[in-house]
Length: 209
Image 1 (cartoon, rainbow, N blue to C red):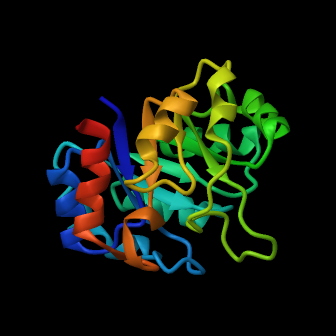
Image 2 (image 1 turned 135 degrees about the horizontal axis):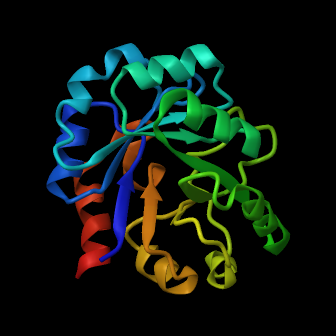
């Protein structure tokens, strides 16, 4: 069984469908440049629907005020998707008591070295595709990379495969990378920030059939 994180959810229907499909995590983005952004103060009704899934606040280089707002919203995890250092990850964990996912960009084999600095500090590491040049946000572009780069990864921290995944490639990506958990956002949308229940179901089915 491959664990799924459905990310960038914005509506009760999104969350309910994710839960119905057995998602382990539901990701809510708190970053205004993203088409998936929702304010931390506006997510109570979404978190209330998560059932046995765990809620993840996705943040990009957040200040302490945003960290505190995400914590107060009732999330189970924080995902740091910017330029945060290992020291900042440790600081955020100590400040909130929450588990932290650190996202790292990947384009080539040398990029994997960055994971070593977060090994044993972050609770999970998420490997995402490097964003296009000039991008105003670090993720959610639907770009992929050579998922096989992760096959030889040697870290003790659990990790998530992300970047360009969709129903038609996720099984091959899991096989190539050895991933035990995957994260998807744009690959389950019919438009930026607008989730498709049909695509969500197809994604889950691709991993479980």
